[in-house]
Length: 102
Image (cartoon, rainbow, N blue to C red; front, side, top):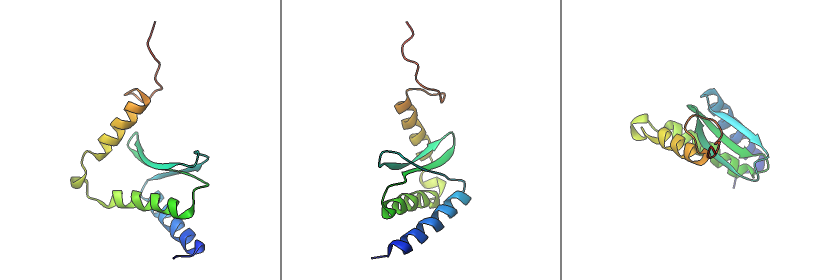
């Protein structure tokens, strides 16, 4: 098993590589959660700062793998992710849901 320092080094190298590729990496208090999203055409990796290093590394590896697959193999992935995000938000224009006008 890799040492914690080795995992931290791998994490930092992969983080830098993804940032150079235009991926925005957000770290903060996210309730112990993390994930990958695409918002307004930009890939995001969101991860709680308190996640174990191995889970942070797995998130970044998943993003790297996603970017490594040629577009022809997942031409609608971005649209699918954006569509699911819009369904969750309840809108299609990027704003907050406003509810039923009365």
